[in-house]
Length: 155
Ligand SMILES: [Zn+2]
Image (cartoon, rainbow, N blue to C red; front, side, top):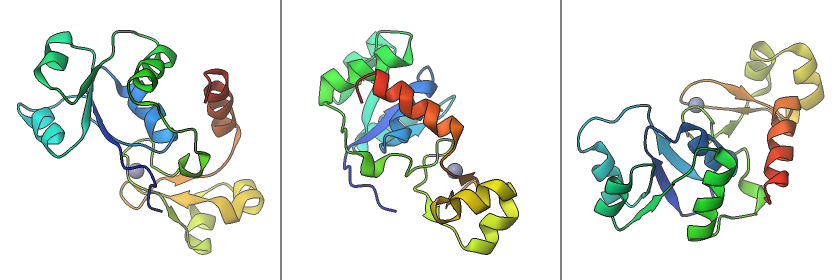
Protein backbone atom coordinates (compact mmCIF):
# COMPACT_ATOMS: atom_id res chain seq x y z
CA UNK A 1 0.00 0.00 0.00
CA UNK A 2 1.41 3.37 -0.92
CA UNK A 3 0.60 6.32 1.21
CA UNK A 4 -1.28 9.13 -0.49
CA UNK A 5 0.26 11.64 1.87
CA UNK A 6 3.53 13.25 0.77
CA UNK A 7 4.45 14.80 4.14
CA UNK A 8 7.21 12.97 6.02
CA UNK A 9 8.12 13.43 9.67
CA UNK A 10 10.96 12.59 11.97
CA UNK A 11 10.15 12.65 15.68
CA UNK A 12 12.85 13.15 18.31
CA UNK A 13 13.40 10.59 21.06
CA UNK A 14 10.92 12.32 23.40
CA UNK A 15 8.01 11.96 20.98
CA UNK A 16 7.44 8.21 20.60
CA UNK A 17 3.71 8.34 21.31
CA UNK A 18 3.17 11.18 18.89
CA UNK A 19 5.07 9.21 16.23
CA UNK A 20 2.78 6.25 16.81
CA UNK A 21 -0.37 8.33 16.36
CA UNK A 22 0.98 9.99 13.23
CA UNK A 23 1.64 6.49 11.84
CA UNK A 24 -1.92 5.47 12.74
CA UNK A 25 -3.32 8.30 10.62
CA UNK A 26 -1.02 7.35 7.77
CA UNK A 27 2.03 9.59 8.02
CA UNK A 28 5.48 8.24 7.29
CA UNK A 29 7.08 9.09 10.64
CA UNK A 30 10.63 8.11 11.44
CA UNK A 31 11.26 7.53 15.15
CA UNK A 32 14.01 6.02 17.26
CA UNK A 33 14.40 6.06 21.04
CA UNK A 34 17.88 7.46 20.49
CA UNK A 35 19.70 9.05 17.57
CA UNK A 36 23.41 9.04 16.89
CA UNK A 37 25.04 12.45 16.19
CA UNK A 38 23.99 13.94 12.88
CA UNK A 39 21.22 11.41 12.26
CA UNK A 40 18.42 13.92 12.89
CA UNK A 41 20.00 16.49 10.59
CA UNK A 42 20.43 13.85 7.85
CA UNK A 43 16.75 12.94 8.13
CA UNK A 44 15.74 16.59 7.93
CA UNK A 45 17.96 17.03 4.86
CA UNK A 46 16.13 14.11 3.26
CA UNK A 47 12.99 16.23 3.48
CA UNK A 48 11.41 15.19 6.76
CA UNK A 49 9.79 17.73 9.07
CA UNK A 50 11.45 17.54 12.48
CA UNK A 51 9.15 17.25 15.49
CA UNK A 52 11.02 18.10 18.65
CA UNK A 53 10.45 18.82 22.33
CA UNK A 54 13.69 20.77 22.40
CA UNK A 55 13.42 24.47 21.76
CA UNK A 56 17.08 24.92 20.81
CA UNK A 57 16.85 22.04 18.32
CA UNK A 58 13.68 23.51 16.82
CA UNK A 59 15.45 26.84 16.33
CA UNK A 60 18.31 25.08 14.58
CA UNK A 61 16.05 23.76 11.78
CA UNK A 62 13.66 25.85 9.73
CA UNK A 63 11.77 22.70 8.72
CA UNK A 64 10.72 21.82 12.29
CA UNK A 65 7.84 22.01 14.70
CA UNK A 66 8.47 22.73 18.39
CA UNK A 67 6.14 20.51 20.38
CA UNK A 68 5.87 22.12 23.78
CA UNK A 69 3.46 19.79 25.62
CA UNK A 70 3.31 16.38 27.29
CA UNK A 71 0.00 14.80 26.29
CA UNK A 72 -0.17 13.13 22.89
CA UNK A 73 -3.56 14.75 22.28
CA UNK A 74 -2.03 18.22 22.70
CA UNK A 75 1.04 17.23 20.71
CA UNK A 76 -1.12 16.17 17.75
CA UNK A 77 -2.94 19.45 18.07
CA UNK A 78 0.33 21.41 17.82
CA UNK A 79 1.29 19.56 14.64
CA UNK A 80 -2.23 20.00 13.26
CA UNK A 81 -2.07 23.75 13.89
CA UNK A 82 1.28 23.95 12.14
CA UNK A 83 0.46 21.99 8.98
CA UNK A 84 -3.19 20.80 9.09
CA UNK A 85 -3.12 17.02 9.32
CA UNK A 86 -5.26 15.00 6.96
CA UNK A 87 -8.68 13.69 7.95
CA UNK A 88 -8.64 11.30 4.98
CA UNK A 89 -9.16 7.89 6.50
CA UNK A 90 -8.02 5.93 3.45
CA UNK A 91 -4.49 6.08 4.85
CA UNK A 92 -5.33 5.16 8.41
CA UNK A 93 -3.79 1.95 9.69
CA UNK A 94 -1.75 1.53 6.53
CA UNK A 95 1.66 1.66 8.27
CA UNK A 96 3.31 -0.50 10.89
CA UNK A 97 2.94 1.26 14.24
CA UNK A 98 6.19 -0.23 15.47
CA UNK A 99 8.60 0.24 12.55
CA UNK A 100 6.78 2.66 10.17
CA UNK A 101 6.85 0.35 7.11
CA UNK A 102 3.85 0.37 4.78
CA UNK A 103 1.71 -2.72 5.44
CA UNK A 104 0.88 -5.31 2.77
CA UNK A 105 -2.06 -7.59 2.21
CA UNK A 106 -1.37 -11.12 3.39
CA UNK A 107 -1.50 -14.45 1.71
CA UNK A 108 -4.29 -16.36 3.38
CA UNK A 109 -2.10 -19.17 4.65
CA UNK A 110 0.52 -16.91 6.29
CA UNK A 111 -2.19 -14.99 8.13
CA UNK A 112 -3.93 -18.17 9.18
CA UNK A 113 -0.79 -19.46 10.86
CA UNK A 114 0.05 -16.21 12.60
CA UNK A 115 -3.18 -14.79 13.99
CA UNK A 116 -5.74 -16.32 16.37
CA UNK A 117 -8.36 -18.50 14.64
CA UNK A 118 -11.28 -16.23 15.51
CA UNK A 119 -9.43 -13.25 14.04
CA UNK A 120 -8.69 -15.13 10.86
CA UNK A 121 -12.29 -16.18 10.36
CA UNK A 122 -13.74 -12.83 11.27
CA UNK A 123 -11.29 -10.55 9.45
CA UNK A 124 -9.36 -12.65 6.95
CA UNK A 125 -9.89 -10.20 4.09
CA UNK A 126 -8.70 -7.28 6.21
CA UNK A 127 -5.57 -8.69 7.82
CA UNK A 128 -2.41 -6.76 6.95
CA UNK A 129 1.21 -7.68 7.41
CA UNK A 130 4.43 -5.73 8.04
CA UNK A 131 7.06 -7.05 5.61
CA UNK A 132 9.85 -5.53 7.75
CA UNK A 133 9.12 -6.66 11.30
CA UNK A 134 6.66 -9.47 10.40
CA UNK A 135 3.78 -8.25 12.57
CA UNK A 136 0.16 -8.88 11.61
CA UNK A 137 -2.56 -6.24 11.98
CA UNK A 138 -6.31 -6.57 11.91
CA UNK A 139 -9.33 -4.49 12.91
CA UNK A 140 -10.12 -5.28 16.53
CA UNK A 141 -10.91 -3.75 19.89
CA UNK A 142 -7.48 -2.14 20.23
CA UNK A 143 -7.91 -0.37 16.90
CA UNK A 144 -11.46 0.59 17.84
CA UNK A 145 -10.18 2.29 20.98
CA UNK A 146 -7.59 4.26 19.02
CA UNK A 147 -10.24 5.31 16.50
CA UNK A 148 -12.54 6.53 19.26
CA UNK A 149 -9.72 8.45 20.89
CA UNK A 150 -8.83 10.14 17.58
CA UNK A 151 -12.46 11.00 16.99
CA UNK A 152 -12.66 12.61 20.43
CA UNK A 153 -9.60 14.65 19.49
CA UNK A 154 -11.22 15.99 16.35
CA UNK A 155 -9.93 13.55 13.72
ZN1 LIG B 1 6.85 -3.32 11.23
